[in-house]
Image (cartoon, rainbow, N blue to C red; front, side, top):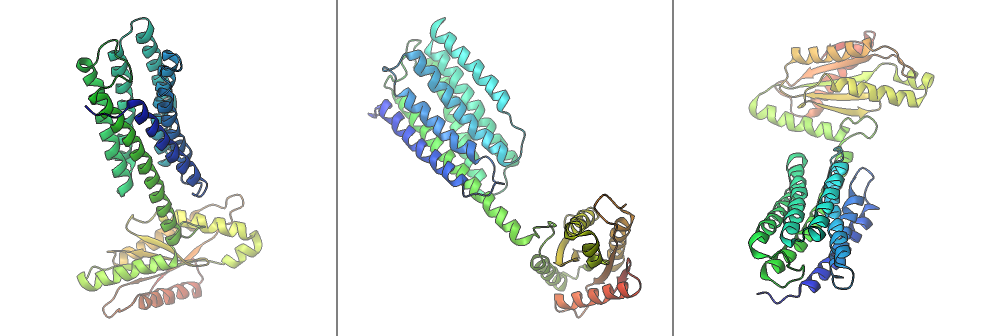
Length: 382
């Protein structure tokens, strides 16, 4: 039998939880507002820690107060981990549903403490409910988490935590008695408290890693996307063009390049203001994306000029895509505060002898200027 004192082990786990909660809450201030869920994740280990510290008052406070308050804090703490992940992934909150479940569980525990005292049933109900919450959290991460290390690690810890809880719930039926006390020294109880407390620490670390991965993804997106329009930056789209050129040189699959310029954009800014000009750019990017495939790349080349990379696209198909975008913008009615505008487009396709992206850009640029010289709102091929 392990010689660890359960009360000391419980209090030590609570102190560790407090530290993790304070770390999560402290980091929340330095993270972008788009990283949601940090407040709930920070409160979760604090509540779990409060529950364990409350359990440590067994014998000091009335047993009913210790049991129900400690159990409520632990149930809510574990649920907050789940709700924090829901916020991170922008999912609808299940808080009300779990609040109803927790209320029902506490009423059940109170019944089996006073009306029909049975420690085994209380353990079965309480541990089973915790296992359900933890399993739901693990399932959420498996379904909505990205392929990064952090959600996989956290989900693995949660499934292990759920397994510990299920084992504790089932084992009580033959290891405990109806009048067993919470801190009765036993190998199973010591192992359960140690495993569960350690898993809460690992979950806290896991959600901290998840937040870190999301921050890194946010910065990577900012580095490769234009902050105004959401299109790729010039550097990012040209890098994609260079990769496509190398693939074309190796495998011979055609690809095309478009350069697009919104006609008379300076006039739009001078007449309607720069805010209207920004709205025109944003609207155009949204419209252009609706005519592109997921593999295509739209980048802001500079000012009101854009570049579109069309992988595995021959010249005729590229012209068709360009014409659809041109016609769609021309057909867009003038909205309140958003002036009507058109676009000129130059099209080119990779040709034998092309050694650099600059060669394609030059041809598409020449075709664009031809479209402008011919009266704008046209597609020309170079």
